Length: 116
Length: 115
Image (tube, rainbow over the protein chains, first blue to last red):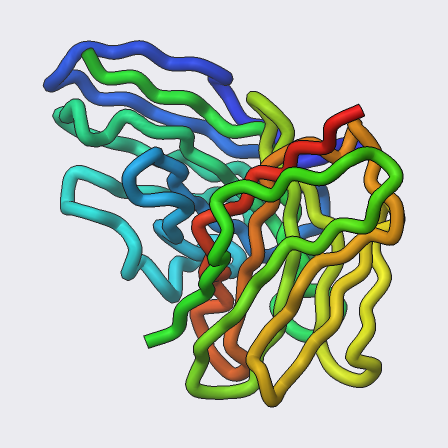
């Protein structure tokens, strides 16, 4: 079956521009997560959605970062006024649920963001 | 604070030999433990996880991991390495009862299997 998909696969932008990154989770998965992978910081949690709600936004690095999820499916991560330190690979993951055997997170291929 | 340590940046092994990639964790409660693998320019692929029960967990591609509560370790093993196993491996932990459900990752270990 289809896995988690993300678009675009690569995004190059200029400092100060806004960007939107999209995630399509596995169909039927209620939980969705965003992580960031960078050389200096490794893999960092950004935000977690259960349905359309975000019970944990604690990993968002600044108020320039926001995310939403609609219809319990697609999620968009928006970065406003991008900075060079935002350059990273942004990974999305989804899980069927959050307990026991349903909590395995399956990852998409990521969006590589480069801020010039 | 919860944390995961992968003490080796790189592990080198000859094809056909056994491999071990080390992981230790520090959490305030009972852990769920995971191993993921990342190939170049790809996302993370799930290998295996420990929830409860048998301390030896078997996963994809012939990998297994042993949960050791007293040593707070969850080392990844494979009896006979393949060149195609060369990749970046991440250990991760989630704390039971943590309402965030987020994964906390180690820094990753690069596995190089030479022919």
